[in-house]
Length: 531
Image (tube, rainbow, N blue to C red; front, side):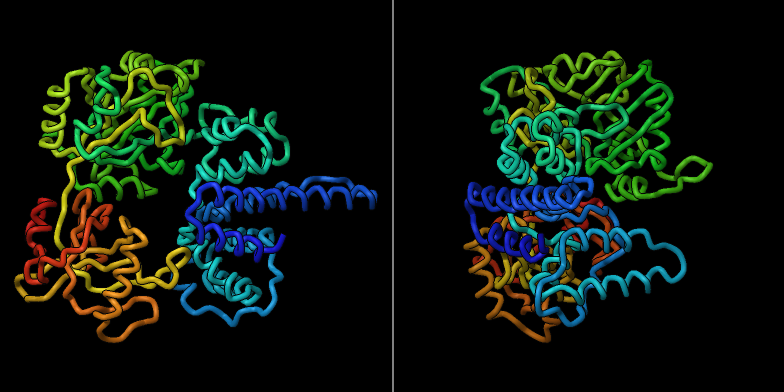
């Protein structure tokens, strides 16, 4: 298979809103991989050579269709992809060749590695056509926003391999990337998928929560049944695997960060268990038990060497679920059984605070107390539901207070992928009362419908002002936009020293002028940061 076939599939998937059509396109490409492998096997057998399906290609193709490289780190950044070499005229690259090239780049270390990586990247891109160059750039930067979400790709794998979707989804619970799932399904069908199962020491995809606007909206989904309402902590998701004294700690994205969290390892080793898999949050707390700024937690989790002494910012861990305990898998057990098991083996101080009730007033009061204590909100959970690994289902519903600001658009980026031809990602600015100007707080493309994109493309073309680098269009600071966000954090990236977390567009405010926009001081106050 040529890389150009994936580029064509990507463009077709990006161009349609139909989930069914997206699945058909993805499944068709995966079937071609399988057919090519069968043909290659037959050719090898006819020549007297040992046969072997080209299973690696299926894994690579599935990874690329999901918008990801197989290599978690390649050393290639955005700057390396700014000036691309002259493109090839005819497509010759294959996904396997691309994968091998990035694998070689990721292995380069030491003196001269940067230059060697740049040379290797230039050679690869010189073999790519213009469309393939754009595809590879988006793949490296994680910008292939084609609507091929992981759940959609899993459905396509099932269709391509002619296996039940439930078998694919079950296997995917125990594999972070979808590539190995595609490889197994296409090569061995259901029997190969059944080899994927929970194994202590190997991370499981985390269960995720859907959202509700408020407590009433969350409880309405449970029809008056008794629920568990957990405090939603503003930390990093951790999955802790324990086998005797051996402990492994994984993030939500299933990266191994064991060496970075000695406090979590120490607590896990102290548990009276032979084997366990625990789900929880690690976060930095102050002396009063309130959460410290999220960046302090993130910085600790991102530090490889904490040194022989105690970390300067200690982390605490709070668990809210258990997936395995002393030889028994609990994924399919109802939540009330898992919570009972959790409470038996984890000290109360290390368990996420919760209330179990059917009383809406009790949940509302707990929500208000939780937010007042500085935490994010609640996660309301069905007591009879299994642990639905890797899924964002109806059994968990998160509730957070919504913060909004009226900000000014300072610039806008040209879209790519499905948004190509539109002005998409907007740069957000708060009013600076000291200078009379505006200070950038971040950017977002979240919350935009096609109608919004069409409107803002016309609007910001009218407001375009000053030079453009071909990617970012500077605009006159006149358009006010209402932005919802989850919190304020310190930032060295932006001149105001702060940035918004998970910013998303609510609506454009034509009823407000830029002089009525919220100020930098107001933003800092929301984050409890001195102005």
